[in-house]
Length: 345
Image (cartoon, rainbow, N blue to C red; front, side):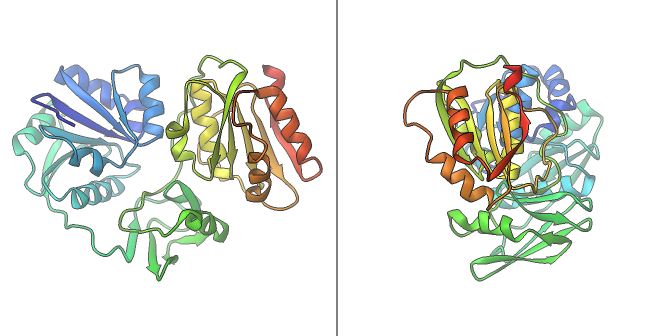
């Protein structure tokens, strides 16, 4: 990415859009290039109507590719979680970073970042400036997730691996596995899903707790009923990667994947067939779009039933309603419908 002389705002997460932070900065700064990092941030950005670019990689990777003046914008759940987030990004980046953290009203200038830019942004927002340092990530054997509330889902790379029991979750790598140190009640099946695609490095993993987005989606125009069905097997964070213009529906396998896919699909107007095992984590508030069906598996696991249904997804175009009806017949007696939006179509 070549930024030239244009100031670049790298936005993390949906809250800076939903709370109006991006809009306020844009009104004050004028000509600014906005790049959105992450999945739910893109959904909120599209709904805001502001001119944005999208890059589905972590903020540190986005910033590392930029050549020119740039800053990071975030709104953490708590002042401490926002500071921890900035420290992680700055440590991975390995150079100076200006980071606006909206929750405490602070502009952090990490590792001798651009002090003039930090001062300018702080003046515009009436925030304070704090010069801080972040060390490069170590081997990643231990990872802390701050700003947690008891009962919240805890994510690693988009998979819910348990629920927080205190304000700080500590995870540790042991061999090729991840285990709890403190602050979390582990969901073993979540860990199984996490490692299904290979080893996980805590030093580079995306870790967070709580709902991915507080605000329900703004319903999009309903898509045509014929097209291609995309499959998301415990990877809701890859929704936009798989999305294509001819997509007519989504098969979402897993509790948290179903919730995330339902939110994004609701924004886009794309129906979802969600496969859950009854352990729905409720990671996103919102409604599923018209034409959607959510199943709770009563015999076996969502993995098994979901992959069986995935085997019926045609290679080419299909009619969504007809395919869903056929898919439901294949698992009759092994799953029950807990949500049916087809009658609203």
